Length: 572
Length: 53
Image (cartoon, rainbow over all chains, first blue to last red; front, side, top):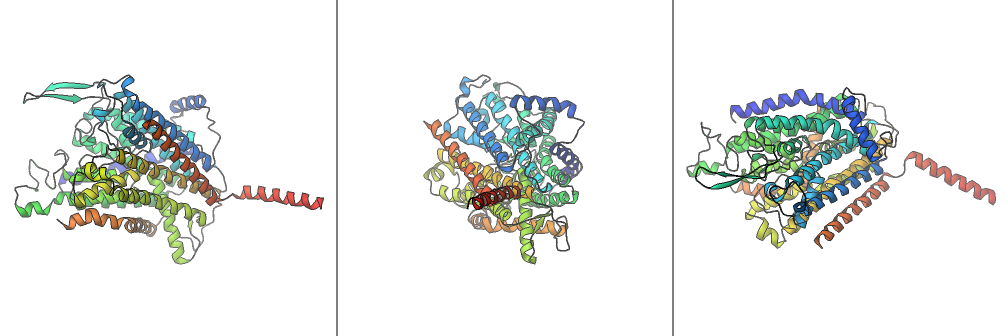
């Protein structure tokens, strides 16, 4: 690993360490509805929205009403986005004359953005109009992220309140998250991105003449505004097909650093939000520690495996150099931008798969088998390190509840988490949450191996590598990540539909038990800690949760990994 | 026609979601306040029946 690689990693940790607690404190105040110095700015906007939408901000909802509100909001969002794609050629602001999008692709794209997945079976610059990208996709990038954070706020209220029946008001949480958190940060960050060279214009294609005398069409568009919320909201859907490997989306090493920081900022900050909302900062530190340790290990593993390169290339003497030189960053360079190199690419790959972001600055398909397996496994852990905005913390809290349940079984006591007894109903809901994602991912992988279009059209590589592409695609969809391994043609009727169903199940079948858990926990009275209470803020608990995360993932996914990246790595 | 299938798929999925909400509600069961209300309602009913007898 080069000095530049170490410098980027250390700088990222320092900047996150300084800013995440501050943002976490601010977000806690937003969700607790306390007075803020920004009330004069945001208050009138919120009140206008409440009045226009007939929302009573004082009226709280029980968990089932809160859940139905989430579902209703998502259905309407889907229908609008689907319709916009289907008629985009008749709508204004289409300087590139894009045709209407086909039904299966519209379904996949609408589901993808409503579920905060941002899986892209299409190439943005050659499929969608500027209007669809700006008012369809980008708006969903704000509100789907806000919906995830609202669900998180509800779960934390379930843990922090006692003897109550309501967990907040979804519409209020949605509005406050969007207006007070996402829009201001994304606005500032978009301007910063423009300063680094990310494009933001209303152009269509510009014809340019190359040095060789050919004519090339260079795409334009409102990219920085989308790039900004793409990172801040852990969305990942880019204006351009190659995502953050495109020089108009991520032009320099500095923009790469800033975008990476933007991916990680809110997910890590939410750990501190949690600590403040449950009135015990130590709980937040414990959650942060679990997130940080797993993220750091995944990052270092990916970086070292890619910096190490492919040993067969050196051994065979095929003239490929993998050593660092003045003109090469060294390591496995295939599928990577030279301006980033294997260190920054590996760090991005680990971060984007730990957060449900799904953007890429290199092609994961070109990684070494073991190097590509780390991002894949990182998603399979449930994207809790540090996780997508809101949903990542939800997953981690649910795994924490599972951990105290297992610890309770070991010592023969009724488990407790934050003073709430964990009983049959909670464990059933946790079981649903844990089982849904692996079930839908593995079932669709299994079915897809029998589908003719998958083997004939979609998979571009044979054998174990092709199977890894399939595993990656459904894992990415099921975890609402959205990153692609590359090397797979996803724009077929089967892949578009199967991935859409996987994304829907991976989003809403996890949100429902999460909110149900909030509903059952909010009723419970708090039990005072006793000598037998298992403390959940200690290093021992951090190790226990990490162990549970790894064991659950290994028990579920080791067999399928053995048929894909593991056997491929052994074959090198 | 394909658009109709897409809308039907989405409606079917969200109907399933509503079913899961109801399933989770059954797992949770009624809360103490509801239980107390239903129990007192049943007691009143029993008392009324008792008076009639």
